[in-house]
Length: 275
Figure 1: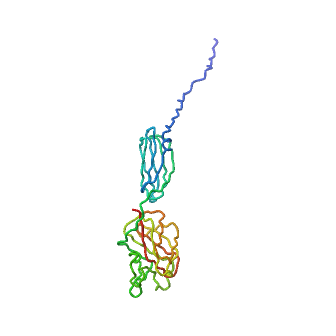
Figure 2 (figure 1 turned 60 degrees about the horizontal axis):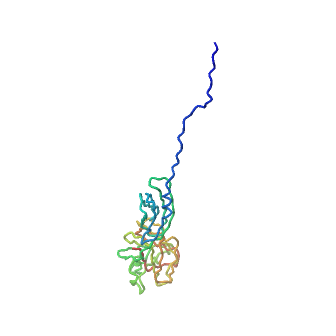
Figure 3 (figure 1 turned 90 degrees about the vertical axis):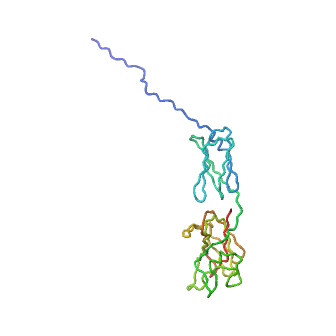
């Protein structure tokens, strides 16, 4: 008996069929809105505006740093034709602004910086303030030139002379005290000071030339708030002003004298804020 051989099919077997890839195209509205975002300065703040002609919901996020802390403001759903948001700030601030469709994946990001309109600076009242120093002359056998004199009124006359009251380092110390010398002012409450004012003693030969400014919340740990070494003119008795680089809430201000004449003096201290 003849056995017939099996014939092979010329048709290739059909494998599993992959479903077609459907590409999801993000609605471009988020990008359109992002390109309309503007920022303007308002009193103590930054005002953002944007246009959403399609009125399709978008998600906006504003990231920035304030008082050395990261902050963010979120507008979760904005579908108004004209949107706006005002964020309180007190200094030049850089914002990272991101816009996306609500529930979308693609994000459009922009960086924007603004300096707000600011309240005028005012001098703080020194009621109850206390000052201390690395050393002082303050006794009836010598002179009453204690650290407290820098936080009295600038017009107060010294108990030991006819000049305005002042602080002086201890000139009786043996060996002679050398630089640096320091004074610390306790303002009793935390304030965002924007600048300080210093008055020299009337004797220009008992002054200092350079100093630095530091601030603290607890009177123990101090951070630089002046930004650099400051120059002081001991021959100028009118108030000399020095800006604070980044105003943050502090209770204590430390003035560290770096160089100058022997036995330096300081007549007055003031602090300014914007309120």
